Image (cartoon, rainbow, N blue to C red; front, side, top):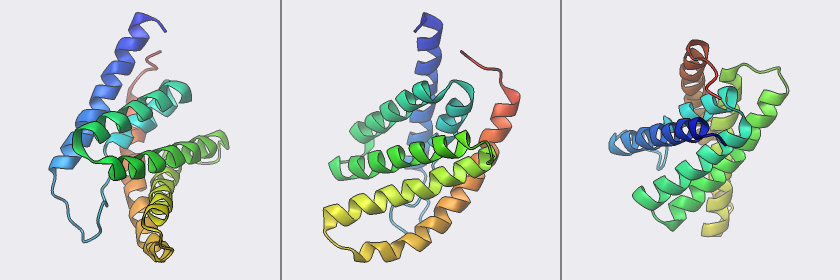
Length: 163
């Protein structure tokens, strides 16, 4: 990677980290533990579309690691990592079909993030009953995905390719 590429990736990681911190500070409580909009996913989604999946994956991985080390514990880090990985894979598949808009890809990411977290929670807590929590999380993931997708689409239409 060139120096410029490293600098831009570093800036994107910092932006995603700051957005994660802002969301951590906002006491949005809708009665569902762990439910949030996922502001940092704007950076990941824009990165997928503007700098490619390899660099976007590195950005996502580093952000999850930094946030886990800064704001959470090991269990939360496992939930976040599983959600981020499954979400990233779903978004790549959705984008590669060329049938979904950026908002559709974002919705896939939001829904699969929650599916990944529920899967880890079911294993860690050794209970299958958490699957009943999934319909609520799918609705939340869909709404969050639409919001993040619209914002990401607006950003993508206004910026040039960085790399």
